[in-house]
Length: 372
Image (cartoon, rainbow, N blue to C red):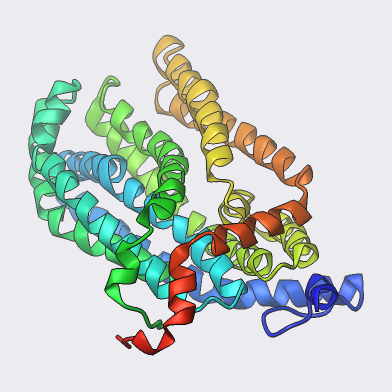
């Protein structure tokens, strides 16, 4: 039985008959998963793009204010919720691969509970956006309009956190709420580095807009950078969906104890997507956070500040700094992926699933299941 699982046989995987056929099948699986993810990501991001487009018709000042408010909301709220929920990429993906289907609902409810609680202090921060922006040196007129815009965004933060949980657990599941509140610390141990990993990356991009407000002619600089960020963000949704599919495939196969298939999935995703979701699928959030910290805040942001403010390159200097950070990030994640022991990662995934006492309780008392 163990040999069969290592060869990738079973309900959740496929046999490795030949290298070419295996790669072809893996590409099909990832593209099939990525289609809905790309569609959902694009539709969700379009809410932000459409809002900015409409505000842009009101003039440069409202556009700058809306851009600042959106970036501030992303830095202080959306990025944290997305990062925390991304722990489900590892936990639910590996639980599904190990056929621990009951844990999907338990992990999702844990995430919903944590994210709802976290949304309360974040909404208070958004309510004081104007004062915080003025404190950090933003233009008074821009800060005033941005504060009003952010207040109307407050209801969205609660829905956004729940939506992130549902996006990562796309199947219905059965469990009891008291299971979800037990053993919540293992979830938090993975959720915190997950949030840090995502926040460190997203913050660097949103800092472009916030820092542009400190440049000469802040209304123009902020408006231009906002348009550039929204355009690039729309295009980024395509590899974002592809990488999400890769995260699912890798976590599924590691949870099922198929390190060879997981390794093949990594080879495929390197060709068609990005490496960061590989880190999430494997549970490397701590490593990813360290790499993001070094690439963006030791290389990218300082380089952008130096070019924009010292060499007076302006907004282009901020962009060049982020490009430098992306190069360093890809190089770092690539090295980690190349030197990974996939048999060891499969063992870690199995231990991560079996370490939760909720799994044992759920398996023993299956009659206590309540269908939502």
